[in-house]
Amino acid sequence: MIRETVALTKRELLRLARNPQAIVTSLLLPILYLLLFGQAFNLSSAVPAGELPKLVNGAPTYFSYFSAGMAGFVAVTATLFIGANVIFDKLFGILKRISSTPASAVSIFGARLIAGVIQPIGLAFLVLGLAVGLGHLGLSGLQVTASIGLVPAVQIVLAIVILSVMFASLFLAIGFSIDQPQTYFAVVNAINLPVLLTSAALYPWGFLPGWMKTVASYNPITLAVDVIRLDLFSGAPGYYPHSAWVYLLGLVGWAAAMILIATVLARRALAPKR
Image (cartoon, rainbow, N blue to C red; front, side, top):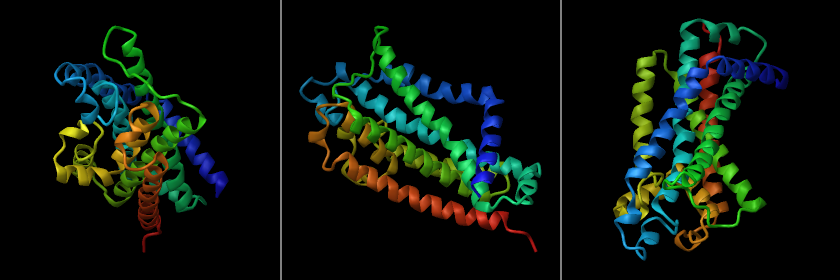
């Protein structure tokens, strides 16, 4: 099973490498958000200095708070097309040919999951690097105020990886269950936008109404970006009720549930038709 998974993973990565337009397109959205939305919506000039930490959970500036949220944002949006690739492979008969090989359904699903999470993980760290770089160009930039040691670095990596795995599994599950791309994108947008907009990825926490704070607290995107903010900003720990490891544990629960559901749906889709 391992050999088949490795071979299929290489195939998926090769397909991605041969489509640089998709990579460039994926980069445009986070860059535009950082350059336009993040720079324009500057709370630091509109809110008294003493009140700002309460609104952005101890981050030094709103842009810093926003940049950490964008890392989680792109980890989600970049996984959206993983399920679409499954549908197109169905339409062109590619998935049928692959499923007729000795490769098991777990190998086929696992290869797509592994290859699919590499791009969003890379984009998330690229966003963080770009946000820091903007500060050296005279614009608002990401200000890292905490000391990043081995443990915080590992926690940040784990948060982004687990979040990417969770949403890649979710979109793969939808892709294996749906046969038409139009239906897929309609379903994904119906899920994607509410999940993003009920998280604390972009909105200042202090501006959220009480009911939305409750929803956002259990949102997997919020769990991931809370880990990033706790590790990047020295003033953040006093604004969060739990440690980074607790939020990571919640993320693991979400990811495990999504992987289980997606694996079951992949088995059904790839089972021989009678």
